[in-house]
Image 1: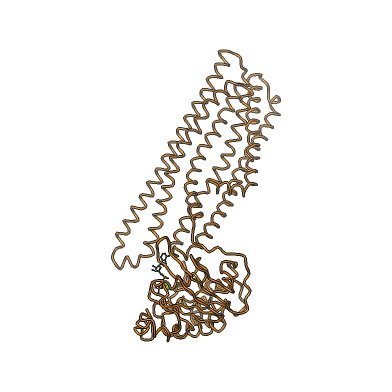
Image 2 (image 1 turned 45 degrees about the horizontal axis):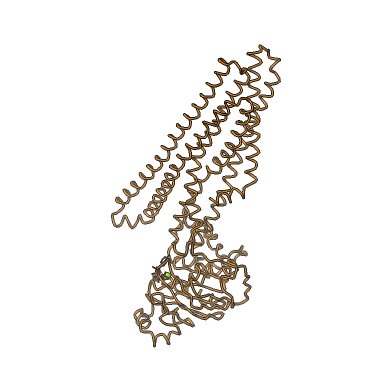
Length: 576
Ligand code: ATP
Ligand code: MG
């Protein structure tokens, strides 16, 4: 697991604090044992009074204090280590999933993945907060305890040497089993949350079709399977801790037996040594055993974590951006050369598309539903990388530029604009990528025809939208996207006209806004309305991903049968 090591390397400071603390812990354990035995020896064997043990008693208090302090320090550092690692994983996951959400997976799918994987990240907590500190302690403490015991009495050391390998051996066997089981558990969890979200989202539809009851049963089966998987993991955990307990108790018993023989039968050992070893030996096994418990939790986390890392490392269609700046004072010159895209191995194929877009040009993309229009817009926007061919911006390949340099100039009004959970104002500002000056947001709202709506709302621009807030109608969403575009002042406007007919008022606003936006921008519009198509400088007519015609309305009308059929059938209002 090279990612783990990478994470640990990044947090090496915290790891070294734990190592140092573990060394101190060993010292305090040995010191505590030594002082305790000294006190007992002086009082019970030598018959000394309080004055004889005053010094060791005070020292013992100090050592106990040290041991507690060091243990707390280790636990705290572990928690901090976990939060650091989790933050890093979350960032990488979010980056990964948000980058991929327009590509081969939809937005809903992205939401599901985020929720499932954020849970999985949370499950890795115990690896860093519990497992890592415990492994460090369990390597350092028993090692030095073993050396101490060997120096005092070699026979006990031999017994330890013979018995202790059973403990790690045992949890390696158990661990392998648990890992499988916990991966199974994550999978069940995955299935459960996926089903749950799907059903919640489709609840109205399901109710309409009277299928809600069947779905209830689906959730029930799914959650029962999750319960069983969890119980399996717990069962293995309990059995393994019982076995570990048994092994360490037997070993301590063996050591005690040997010491008793030495002390009573052979009489070649004094009380002090015997007692000291009897105090150190359980500590030794305790730390080895705790490694076993930690190993179990570590395994569970690893099951979750390997899923997370699998996701992070999955090769995904994602644009690789460069470092070039893009300084513009007018719309850029954009050229598409044989641009193609394919979803997955043998999914829908778009292209090749070649088109020249000098500054300020109006391009319309037309075609039947599913002909690849939105896909082409995604490619031009840089949200998805082209598979073959190039998109050139100012005579330079698009992916040579820095992502933000390009995105700063682009407004993309999609078919179904996304509303974030936040206030109306935040939802508009998000498009600008800067803090707008006073009054700017209002102007954008007005131009987009949303001003009236904000006047009607009780909390105006502070109204909460999206998850947990107020909903918006399709037309209102489209207007909100327009407001975002106005605030941004883009040089490139990408518009995916909604397929459903808009109300007349929104239509009017849309037309007016687009005319205004197009005065200082290159417009690329997926057009459904004949009006938009006819107004454009060039039309790209797609059929099943291929370019079936390219030119002005008159040219296409004369030469492309399918285009003529489509535009006449629409009777001038809407093209499907
Ligand atoms: P509409 O007019 O209905 O919006 P469109 O022309 O915009 O249609 P696209 O969204 O570009 O069509 O889709 C083109 C084809 O690619 C469709 O057949 C669609 O099923 C397929 N497709 C779209 N998104 C994906 C995806 N994420 N994975 C696989 N195939 C996809
Ligand atoms: Mg589309």
